[in-house]
Every structure is written in C-alpha cells, then in structure tokens.
Amino acid sequence: MCLAVPGRVTKIDGEKAEVDISGIRREASLALVSDQGIKVGDYVLVHTGYAITKLDEAEAEEILRAWEDVAAAERDG
Image (tube, rainbow, N blue to C red; front, side):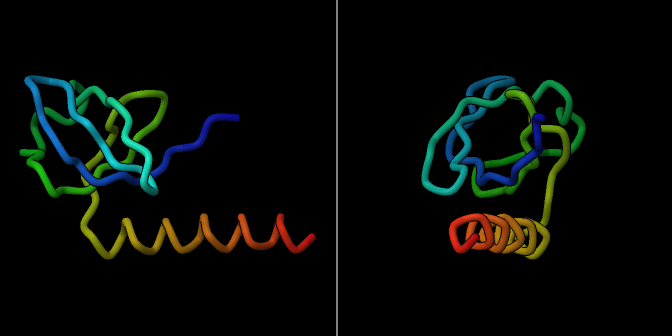
C-alpha cells in the first residue's frame, strides 16, 4: 500500500523539489502542482515521488501527528 505523506519544501530546481519528510530529504516532482505557486518553506503532500497538493502548515502538522499516533500504537502493540 502506498500512502501520501506531508513534507516541507527545502529546495526547488525547475519542476523538482527537495522535500523534508520527518527529517529525511527526498526528491519530489512538482509537475502536478505547478499551478499552486509552491515555494521553499511550503508544505506539500507527496505520493510516489510526486507532490500532489499544497498544504498549509496546520494541515501538515495534523497529518504528521496522526502518523506519529499510528507509529506509537504499532510500537506499543
């Protein structure tokens, strides 16, 4: 199963961006969000190497908290 995760854009080079996802830097294509005015510091939802939408910081933090809760539940059994 592939899931989309939020990340913060740290660098942009044309239609490619470096995105920080929970401390891990990944490359993501901005081709699908080229009309959303993505800039360094913005949050995007990344799925299979593509940014699929721009998120505001509150949305990104809410999703990240949910991921942390899932990880904690799995650790704690």
